[in-house]
Image (cartoon, rainbow, N blue to C red):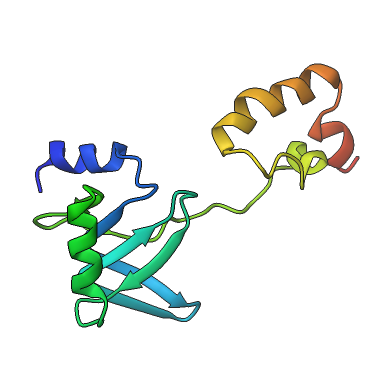
Length: 134
């Protein structure tokens, strides 16, 4: 897969698509699997609906239906899809916002919710609330 092709797949909205290719996935916290010519079905909500290895009984049927509906995205060459590395840490200034705006994508929260919160609390700082005095 060329760099240009890989960038195109990376920009593709995969909601409602079936991705065919090579994958690494972690079906359990302590196990990593490598899958070749596998299919990952992604729902309209962006959640993974199914992971079908090449030898799965439903592989060919899902492949055919995805092709027919023009929902198939194929990774080619040496391209691999790997699990997202999710950063779950929080900085002290974000503490007051825990559990808020979980219904929106991060970029929406960053541009909208956080800016309104900051505008309403201009003097709140991590230094004032969380730093120890020596």
